[in-house]
Image 1 (cartoon, rainbow, N blue to C red):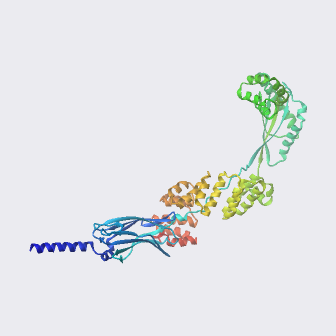
Image 2: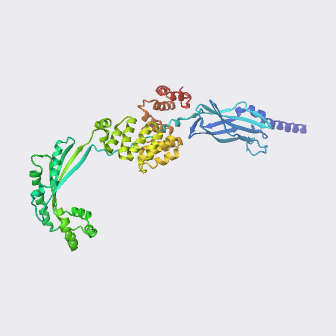
Image 3: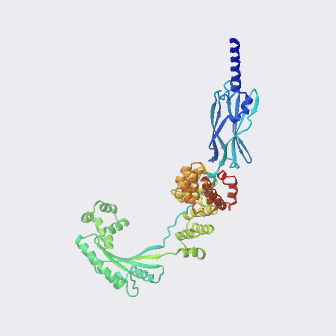
Length: 552
């Protein structure tokens, strides 16, 4: 009896092992026992690729020791399938070199990467499993659907680039000066009549008189500055320059600004006791022998008495100074400070059409900045290039062409820029490369520009490369579509909402719809999509956009 009992127990145990391990066919029919998960559950396209981390868990007593399981990852979309290389698993008794799943069960983790192709926006990822045993292939009863997708929100990024025109140096008010001077005899403060009749004084008077008839010029003030030459005693020179200031002021009021001129303006009178700066300037411009030695003396000594002594010690040189330099420093200067009122914005725009030839370089550049129509900008910048061969005009011509979408013309205009270190040039040439899809060359150019616009443009490439946090940092403060997009991509929905609060255009409302959908606000999402759908391309995109899977 005992032997029979033991034999029965052994047979029963054998039957238990056989049924618990199942058969290859039983494996295929028991698909529901296999646990499959994916992260993320909604697939996302990042930098042109779709990445899915898939986990497959087999329970105990499921995997037949002599079976092989082939797992085929397939991305199914409207228009086709993308099939990756299979993952091969084997039971404990298989002699191949695949990953082993023991009888006690096991878990397999794999990362699958699919290259983006048009149409995968409406797709799903499935695993197709097949049991292989003794040259027989037994498919699982159904594939495992593990994820939906794919999210392509980053592809909404605007890649036209942010443009920047080179600035002009146009002045609405231009300060001007006109001056004349009279000379005094040594140690004298008397104004000689001949000095007031010189051609220089007559020209100065004519200038003052012309101001009264010039609507664009206004005399703001007149400075009278009297000097003593830096030879002689300091206290005597101080008193002498003071007296010269008085006589020069009298001469201006009585003789120069006479009744026929009669300019009313603030007159300021001052004096400089010893004109060392004037001395230095005249010596520097002269051909005096040993002038470098004289200038070194001025640099070495600040005390006027020491300076005079050291220069006088150079006897031969000092004779020349007394004859050619010092007499020119015994003087009084009359300086008229004038403001010229330049063309107004309205006048500049009118002159572009009526008399563009009279505009100088800065006026042309300013006029170009005032015009709204890019074609008119092209005309103005072409004129500036033609007349002045201006690098700034060439850059702005290129930017105007880029505004019009004429990328080849823009590249030609920028090619002739001579100053290749110009920060505006690098931003513009970077945009040319960006539009060509030459992203490395574009970034290299943008990195040579100090403009905030260049940072915004680098952020475009960051988004395309999946570096969303870097992009958001660079776009901070841009208050643009791309900044809002970067905030969405970094899940900073509140910041994106602030930027888009008053959005009216379809593209920004599309982003508003995405935010509302993510926040579960269906009504707001539909309202924003209604505006966005005025753009046919966006309306078509919305139909398959996974962002709106719970909305539409």
